[in-house]
Amino acid sequence: MAPHAPYTVGDKTFTKILTFAEQLDLPIHIHLHETEDEIRQSLHSHGLRPVERLHNLGLLGPNFIAVHAVHLTSDEIALLARQGCHVAHCPSSNLKLASGIAPVAQMLDAGINIGIGTDGAASNNSLDLFGEMRLAALLAKGASGQPETAPAHDVLRMATLNGAKALGLGHLIGSLEPGKAADMIALNLSTLETLPCYDIASHLVYAAGREQVSHVWVNGELLLEDRKLVTLDTQELKGKAAYWQARISG
Image (cartoon, rainbow, N blue to C red; front, side, top):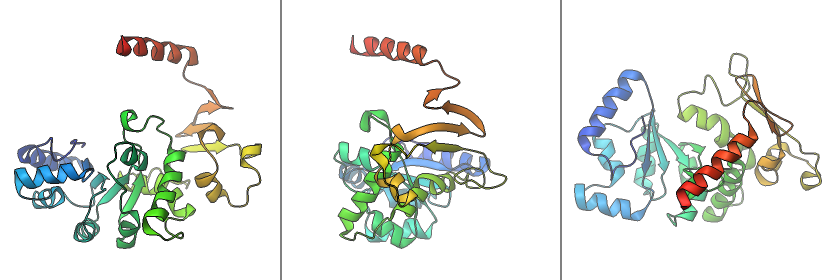
């Protein structure tokens, strides 16, 4: 269930969403505390900060995913942690929209499960998860003043297993284990740009990019082979992109 944000959804609709989510055992994914203006609007309209409002409505819990979570107090971080909530961290979007820098170090210290997201193309452009990993790791270090914050292995987990856990799909995806879906990518790290390689996780976060991805499998099905799409027609996709570019810009 994906209601947009507290400032675009009313209490009655939130109550219905909570009912459906509980009946269908689905997570609730919502943009939350993305900007300071959002919080000011909530205080003016409801007399509450958005997190407190959603908590009072019963939405916070292990099936709740807070997207952005930039402007949080220490008490709100503790509340999200106690309720078992998850956070989708979108560093590029937060910077492009001047929303701010999420308190990743504090959330990690509180034990909140953080996955990495991109938000939409309008506030991200490239939607490159490798770029998001790198930026997430660097921002967390710069904001906390601690170079050991968000080490590469932890950030790689954010981009894989943590996201799967937030979606309630950790038993199916997010890591390579017997019984799980064979969702995999292969990277070519033998190019000059990625040599030498001493630590694979560090390389994936700080040096490699999507241009190094050579193969992609989803549930065992090969979709990208030697950087060539297997099931999609590249020329057709380019044609559609050109068509919509002309429609939108015209």
